[in-house]
Length: 292
Image 1 (cartoon, rainbow, N blue to C red):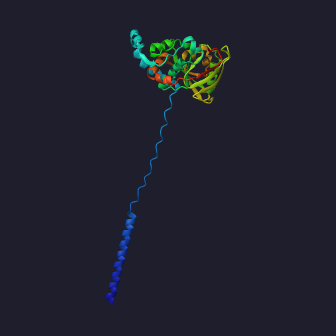
Image 2 (cartoon, rainbow, N blue to C red):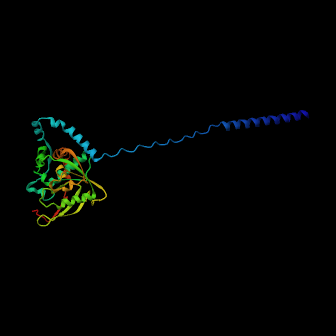
Image 3 (cartoon, one colour):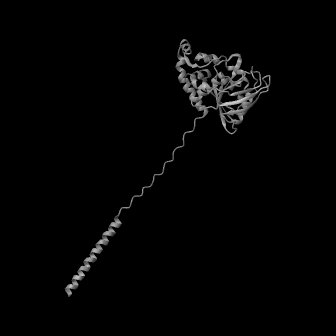
């Protein structure tokens, strides 16, 4: 009997030992289990602000530097070689662009629009966007022929060596500029030949005076008095020539360049003349006046 009781206790002890071992093992496994590592997302570095857009003066300075570098070799060649280079065809004109009988002083002409478009296109090609370009009619002294057109041909059209100027002005000032344009009598040397990007109507009395300007659109929209505009012109106008005393005001920003207008037009036409003919269209509508 005592032996049977001892055997029962032994079995119980074994069971207790097994349970204790299992519990110890379970506890050990539970406490030594590796928890997943928590990886914190890196805080994104603050990106530096984009560099400021170049000012108009900085863009003009870059244009001057590129222009002077490109044409330094040309200025170094002999006059004879320069004359020969000026006779090389730049492009072929599908039609003659006449300037006879002072046409550009009376209404918008295909030639005037062509020249203003080329000026604006040249500036855009060199990173200077403008809302439009214009030139005074008295600068235009010849027409362009049908067929091959050379640099010498363009220099006969614009023989005075004028340089390009870019003006910045508010919408209010731009409306005042258009008032100047409208106030000039028909037949005046200051009659504006304008590029693509602007349209307006001039209404003259029967003598060519008393003009009223209306329906002014820039970029297809009415002038916004709350924004700034850029206009390409030449240094004669910028100095108040052809009656444009508007440009003598201190509150109109004028940025000169070293680029001659005729040379810039020739440069642009050597690659982009075809696009200029595609832009042709009526920009200045004339009512009344002395046009025959």
